[in-house]
Image (cartoon, rainbow, N blue to C red; front, side, top):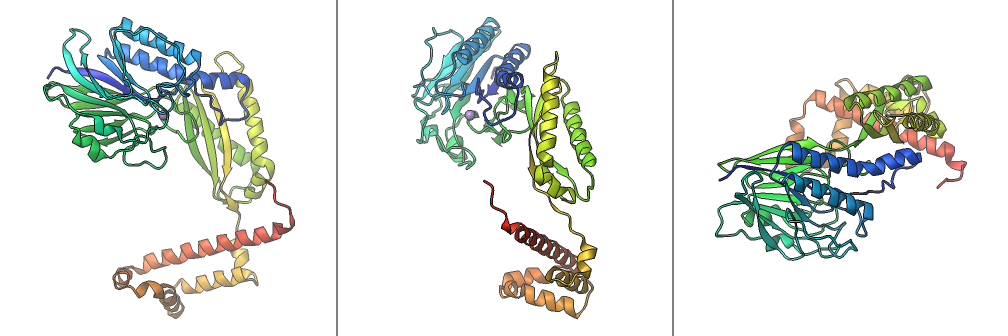
Length: 440
Ligand SMILES: [Mn+2]
């Protein structure tokens, strides 16, 4: 076999609008909107730098069926640049950019192959000497909603011993987080006898199988808070023996983060503000010179909880947005810019356990009971006996329960106590606030 190298990319979503992010200045919004193009430019540069033989792009080149003229022109410009460097390009279209979308007519370029709505196979050649190195099979979405299992159309060329690559925009094994277009299974794909399934559609990078390979490279630029972490493409090297080497390359220009701020026992607002700034700095130093967007989930129990919910989080968000907008207006201001998408308040009110233990209330009684049941003794065995009785009726579970040590039982007790305190405390708070009208 002749060794060769290609890039597997998918889901470029050129000209995504980033509608889900609010509070942005025009400048920052424009920068975000430029990010899909910038990441695609990095892909082009990578192909030239790595001297790959060709690129496969597995659907959703454009974000919208009626893709903007700007997106189309910039895509064509990149294709031309790749052509100048002898890099072949193989493209399929997906549910976001089906073939029936209104698009400008472009003349066929010799180094570019766009697959049609019916399955077809073409031969790809090596850049430096034009020797055939791979058979590429592919199929595009004729319309946005393809519910047929199109993977069943893929067949090897029986007369060819070349490496076989399949391009498909599909939901493999019914990932419920994505629309189930072109549904198929790993078994369907393996049965087709291809060496490498180059997939698109699911935006999360994943290698579903090796030898034969089934790969989602993910999208090249995260588009929302649901698409966190590094985004990019795979450089795939195939050696003389047909062995496959995958190397991931980051391409994203704006990265999305989901971070948790633990505020257990935190007392003051300054401490919270400092924690937020520290985290922003940590994100900044992880990727110096790049922009990031972060959602902070606030967790734990603290006296700050109520104040955070009652406007403090909003105020801090507003203040940090103001600072970010000002920084972004400076020359080079997007380098290291961290934009907070939101604070997601998941914390709870502070609970003073010692005070509750003294209290003449149901909660106080419960905590005192829990404390008595802690040490080994009659109360403890009574408690476990009655609590676990329904489970002990099952023979299998009874056997498992017998294997549980005392230390683990103590852990269960503490967790049950924590859960009861939390539920009862929340309930009490809701009742206190019960007279106020709901705000929706
Ligand atoms: Mn997509």
